[in-house]
Image (tube, rainbow, N blue to C red; front, side, top):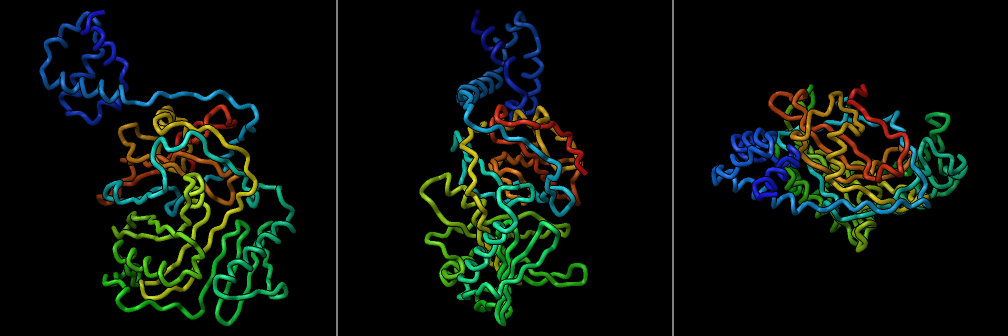
Length: 406
């Protein structure tokens, strides 16, 4: 095969996604020409130097793509049944984040594409669908979490001081109350500590932003710089509340509300040398110290998920495979719009879904997609589309959704 024919054959194998970032005119020409027969390759030989340079770039990018090496099937790993009847939704009725661009939305999990070949999957032992523990055993674990939370504020809780309230027949909350604190634990083992006397912050740490009136109330939106300055104060002065040897400060949020205002939330997790343990700490073992208008702290939340029931270490797909599966329609979402196309993908994130209704804690690729139909007053909406990161041969019941959950 002549060189021109080999080049045209290579061009014909490329996905359109490799051309979306190119100059529009050159991209259009290349797309059209790759549809022609090999016999027309003479055109390519006389193409402009610019088009030749573009093709060289494409070939270089293609040669750098990692090969997908599918590991042999491990029959010792249980097949995971997928159940998406109760996919969680965001505050909009679906999981969508608004912003001027994707850079406004924070994601700082300790992960980069290609970091892991396998990741652990856990049964959600304390979840709504789990029968791992009896209700008595669940209550014992909740009470243990209550005692641990009390220790953070120097409170020793006695058994007779613990209250059990049944919100539903299978949903108890255990709590303790004193003159200084109210402490409660949910079935997922998340603990909330309310300070009846707020913890006041020094004046120089308070936000300089002016309160804004929204729906009859005044709200302060501190800058990210102000949040980070306050978080450093927390780390240096509230070691007893964090109870971490090497706390990592993390930022989430950054999306905008209907008024165009950005909100950030800071949380902390324990650093680890083992990258997988660090990733698990990021998603399952968080501590939030909530501030009110950057002037006082009224409550804090501690997440210490039960990860004792490990199902196994599962091979995962690559980020590229996840993008391809999304394009094929093999995703789950609460966004009320069908996936609009590959060119609207804005970011791919590796996440663990941690909801109470999850049967398994397993990794997913959360792909944030700009949804043109959901623009709002000049702001873009980035919908969350999920593709399981665990390889498909270990999954059953994986449906194909068109986005019409609601």
